[in-house]
Length: 177
Image 1 (spheres, rainbow, N blue to C red):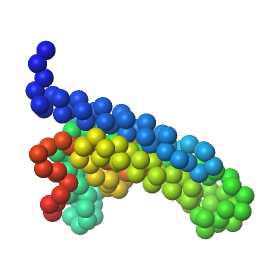
Image 2 (cartoon, rainbow, N blue to C red; image 1 turned 45 degrees about the vertical axis):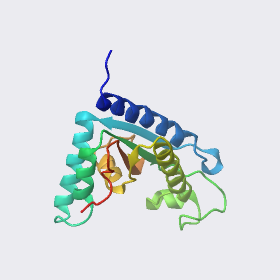
Image 3 (cartoon, rainbow, N blue to C red; image 1 turned 120 degrees about the horizontal axis):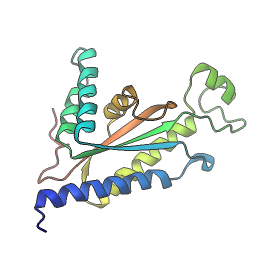
Image 4 (cartoon, rainbow, N blue to C red; image 1 turned 180 degrees about the horizontal axis):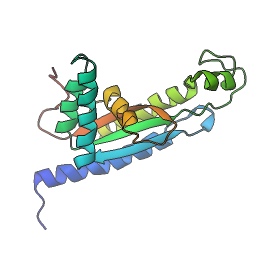
């Protein structure tokens, strides 16, 4: 069977995307409690995410990075989404979220500081896998926001990031306007 460079690059990107989800899963977690969720999108599902990013851009009056980032998602082969279920870990005396205990934080709708930190570590671990495999990528809160809007994660995920992936002669994530 013959594979063109485009075929091989697409396969490499998808293989790396799967490895990125494993890196997110195995990244260190506060108190060893894993609330990470991952999703990989390509094709029409990736296009629907970019469309939601454009809708957000329009709702914001055409301001901000959502429109620009949607173009990057369009130009990407796939995107890895990493979210965190907002389930407080119940650490006594923590208060990092600004509340005296997890019950009060939950009642107020606050995000557990450990969960948010774990999301950052997992996202960094996943992006490092892409970098180690020479797959161009960019961490985007805009794609994560659109993913939450589209309910691409379980119900308790309120914060996520997207990492679109590309393999081209020049990174699509630079010289952005």
